[in-house]
Length: 156
Ligand code: FES
Ligand code: FES
Image (cartoon, rainbow, N blue to C red):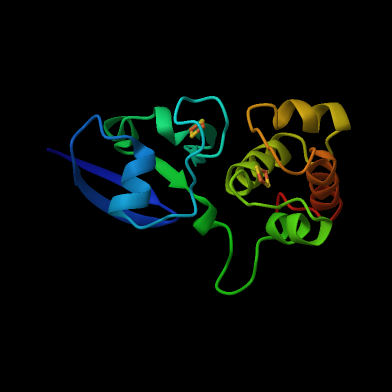
C-alpha cells in the first residue's frame, strides 16, 4: 500500500492504495465518484477522462501513484451546489447526452478544449473531442452543445 495525496475537485485527499491501482477504480470504488465512467478500459474511448493538472487524461491508464501531488477534476467537480456548469447545461439543452456513458468524458474534454480555444471552429471541436467516442448521438448534437457552450462563455 502507498499513501497518495492529491486534490480532487478542490478537496485535499489522502488515499491508501496499491500503487498500480487504476485512478479510475480509486475514483469510483474508494472515493465513490461514480460520475467517471468505464468504457473500453484500454485508453481508447475517453469515457473515463478526467482533468489532471489541467491535462485531459484517461483515468483507466493512470496508476494512482502517478496522481500523487496532482490536482484532479472529475465531472462531480464542475457543478456548483445544485447549479449545473454551463457546459453541462448546454449538453442537456442540445441533446448532447443520450445513454450518458460518454458524457462525463465529453464534458471534461469540452472544458479542456474551451480553455485552449474559447471560440473553437468546428474542426477544432472535432479535434478536441477526437479521443472521446460516442455510440449514441452521431456527434452532431455534441458538436452543437460545444458550440452553444462557447457562445455562452463556458470557459469562465
Ligand atoms: S475506459 Fe478509459 S479510455 Fe475507455
Ligand atoms: S451518449 Fe451514449 S455513448 Fe455517447
